[in-house]
Amino acid sequence: MDIPPPRWIRDIERLLPIRAQFVLSGNIRDSFLTPLPGGPALVPLARCLWEALARQGYGCMLIYDPADGIRVYPDESARRERAESLFDLKLGGGSHMLSLESLSKLMKTLTTTRECRAALVMDFASRIVREPDHLVETEHRFFVAAEKLALQAAAVVPKEGGLPLYNPILWLVNRPQELPSWFALDNDRIAGLVVAKPGFEERQAAAAQLAPLFEGYAAADAAAQQGFIQTFAAGAEGMSIAALSDITELASRQKLGMRDIDAAIRCYKVGSPDNPWQKDYLRARIRDALDSIEERVKGQRQAVVKTLDILKRSAMGLTGAQARSGGSRPRGVLFFAGPTGVGKTELAKTLTQLVFGDERALIRFDMSEFAEEHSAARLLGAPPGYIGFDAGGELTNAVRERPFCVLLFDEIEKAHPRILDKFLQILEDGRLTDGRGDTAYFSEAIIVFTSNLGIYGADEHGRRVQHVSPGDAYEMVEARVRGAIVDYFKYHLSRPEILNRIGDNIVVFNFVTPLVARDIFMGMLRNVRRRLLEEQGLELVLAGDVAAELLKRATQDLSNGGRGIGNQIESAFVNPLARALFALDLAGASRVRVAGLSETDKVVSLNLETA
Image (cartoon, rainbow, N blue to C red; front, side):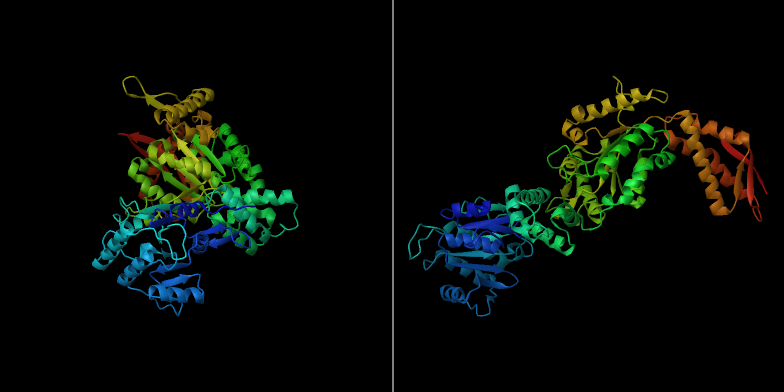
């Protein structure tokens, strides 16, 4: 297979007749598939660059870095001797430290020599100075000399003849702003080139080079080998060639063969060889989960069934199966919509416990805290160069720390639209890169959005009105809530693409009905009994008329759902109970009975009897 040089190499070859210096930024620490006499090979940037310069007739390449000083590349005795002679260097030990003043003189000599074509690579150029925009005198003088040299240098023809080409200086930096901001400004002789992450074809060619190292590859037929290469290249989307090499090394250490390439890629992304999604016990849990979930989330059969369907799809690895490639997307995406207090957050917690066996795997973000555009820096990390960019973002840090998780974004409609744009990348590509350049992968997470859209709205006078109410048929609630969600993303935000990424994963919750409210009330009452027994060793008994009165008080207004029921129980029962218990002598008591309930001046009191 004919392998062309990387794009940035082709750009350098094209610009050598007209550019004196180059600033290379981006993916400079990667490996590059380079054509060599013995066939294509994965090599570092220095080797890739040298091969290109050698094809252009260059006979010498020097590399300088602030740690080791100056050295010749390739490190061969004959080349060292020639460099020592040409540039008055002492390279007997392979490298030599230079002051900035001496380095500046070397740059001038190199760019004007006609003895041979030569190039100078300034590696770790961003580390030459401490602060690029606050230079000390010697540093400032050095960069001024380099800038002046770029403007005054001319293309040269060496003694052996050939076309006029510059003897270039190449600055290697992670980001262009790591050099003084004025250095390359309006300077046509300095070319800025971005070394990009490899595209699919480059990853495919690299995968073909690495494929023989996987167990089982040599024995596979041609079709299987080609399929493996395609899968490897597609699964490594957004990664460097060095990452493909690391995946190959991990696969070897974990004894993962050709058939396990997806597991090898996942292991590299999330840093864990153990995958809860592939455990047999998870399928058994999900298969039998309906009843146990409905014990915690009452009266939401439609929402629970649809949620379990999406979860089953995730456990079978079929998320995005209709697309050509969906392996990097999150395991599942759910949009819980409906009235407040009906179990949206509780269902997210239940899912977390079901899949990961630990509710602490639920990572919750209250999106009302991210209503301002600048708050994106807190969630996703500040852009490079801004204060705090090196700290990363709350979201990206959390996912790197716990890749197997449920991410809950509460009240998503309250987030700033610019923040919502970031979810496009998360939902489609399953990854996000913060200001530090670190990538968080969301491919093993379930993402849950919650929203109250459609329950309330504004009338023609701008007043807040309720669009659906307790007692409305579920079909009406679902239709209005779905319609409000579509209107919000399509017309209010003008971002239908976000809605398209969510797809048909909208799960609408119904209002709490009186029958369900009674079940919720009884469950909360049991919780109070259990807590009193655990904390005080007291058995709690309620007279029949007291329980009936509490039920009436707690369920008379169901607009706030189960949370409203809990609030009523707290104010009408738990608070008076605590007050009454404080007033009693509980020494030797093992049982307390609530014999009566009364209210005076809106203060509820309980009549307690001990035994």
